[in-house]
Length: 304
Image (cartoon, rainbow, N blue to C red; front, side, top):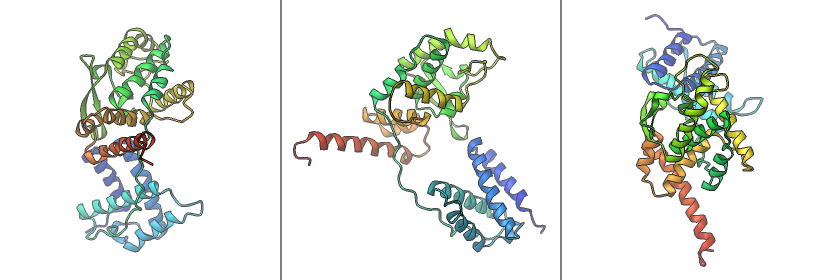
């Protein structure tokens, strides 16, 4: 049987995760970078085909990542890179390019549980009020931020929305990871902000560029990018004088935390967020439990 060059095997793996597993472009690009580093390390050891890789080569790569002269990788980055390597080797076995998974014993580092960072309802109201102007840009920014908070959408999902993804005005159709579709209600505040933007601002922006179905448009009539959305949020936080940095994901975290604190069922929140596993959503219940514990400790006379 002819040997398959490593570069060809890597390309097949990337097509597999992109097409068959439906991973997002950002995830596939991260896989591509990780594999590029791995293949470069293997090439430096004279290994050019999958069957030439041994367990010691995988271990050497992991060791090199932990002992880089410029400093070790962060545990999260190390875990991601080793996860890519392990996935690549499983693929090689599944495709019968090799007989043994030589990366099976390589374990990524255990990551400390990172609780999502949400802001309070009052802080969120301050951020939304900071984009309460009547000019075209403020109308768009208010619509975008209200929608992020009302739906818990990822920023990539929000900027990918088209006008037709608004269903009957009070429902939005979001396309999540792997192209999975979910339907999420839109509250009255977000509806009002989006309606004002669609009537008064979007037509003006649309006239400045080529025709596009995108819901959120920039000043030149193009679709708002993820980077634009991040800048909009950062500027709003500065105007609100929060004193902390927030990101698009802060809106998603706050959406989930505030829903659960208000009594929403965790499985409902799971559906709204588009989580494939309820275990992911349950992390937010730990946040609300911590809040309850703090309130109890502060208020109860025999708590301390």
